[in-house]
Length: 117
Image (cartoon, rainbow, N blue to C red; front, top):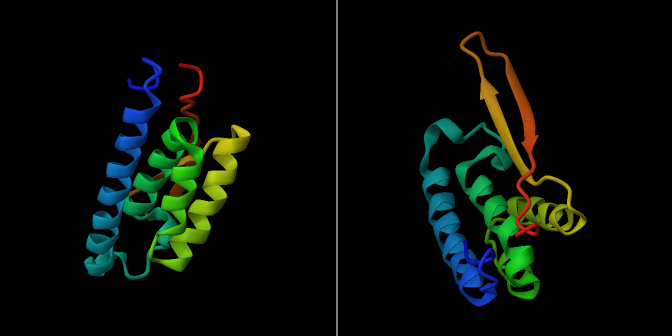
């Protein structure tokens, strides 16, 4: 909404708070025994980082890039650096995973562009 109102400063504040939330989710994901064998790129924290990156490249690239560099986990940080580059190129950064009861899965991408506002 802030970007629709051309308020990049408050949008950047939302991104900053989102990274705080993603870091808390990362701690929760680490403690979740069921996620031990799940790739980190599929964790809730990774999705939250991706959402903030999508918004952040339009709200304030330099501050968003700095927050990505502060992600404590090196695997997630590298992954989110790629997502940052994808966002700059306008390539979808959001992913979703659908798991079926029979064990099959499907991964897809969702394109949510905030730069059109």
